[in-house]
Amino acid sequence: MAQVQEQAATAELTFDTFEGEEYREQLYRYDNCATGVVSVDDFTDDHVQYYRETGYLVIQQVFTPAEIEEALAGYVDLVIGTYPDFRGVQFEAASKKYVRTLSPKQQLDCVRKMQRFVDWEPRLNAMAWHPKLQMVVRRLLEAEPELFADQALSKPPGIGREKPWHQDHAFFNLPMGTPIVGTWTALDPATLENGCMHVKPGTHKEGPVVHFRRRDWQICDDHLDLNRDVAVPLPPGGVLFFDGLMHHGTPANRSESRRRALQFHFIPAGTEHIEQDERMAVFGSEGKEVEC
Ligand SMILES: O=C(O)CCC(=O)C(=O)O
Image (tube, rainbow, N blue to C red; front, side, top):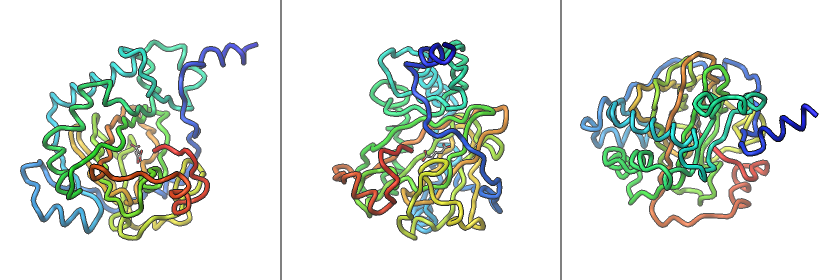
């Protein structure tokens, strides 16, 4: 009976299909933290070159505190049901047993991800198409940007799970060789303790890597070079730009602070899509219907 009630109580909510398993902390050992450029005004051709070489670029201040506040207000409205027909919220599996007992505001600390929200939430749409972000994306992409994916990625205090090392292209049905520029914008301080990004510079030049369904759709732990990790702590409004083939991952949030971010992926306008089977032929046969 108790089981039936629990199912009814969680019937309308969507949960992460991965449970957030234990992993070796060594997977996120790092020697350096990325620093990057202070603001978009400092961005030059040298930084485009740096991105081509390393596969990533950090700009510490792209969005103003007021713009981040607006984005967070939009984020909260999506979670608390201001748009009742919006179905893009996914909760942490770890919150399955209790999330329905919480108020909508308390549920904020159970959210793992939101996606496909730009047509619902004008303040988040404005973040994707912000002139400063777009100026950098256009230069890195060398083409007119088309928004391919929009996501808000959250690691709630204590329960935010690891996102194991992966390449984003492994999730996208796009032809091999498509330039993909990912942008990851911190909405809260992203720290070493609450699960900031980690990247492996240069891995974008090494081509697609076979992924496996383990703690997520991911690169096998045994195939990782643990000596190439650069951690990317960011202040709110800071942005990590990264190549779709760059190996990256984030450790679990074991702290008491929230770590929320917006992730947008841009591709050249008009890029054709491929079939899932074609992607799986390259990235691995376990990658059916996977999502970042
Ligand atoms: O924000 C995170 O924790 C990881 C994001 C990421 O790498 C992804 O979704 O591809």
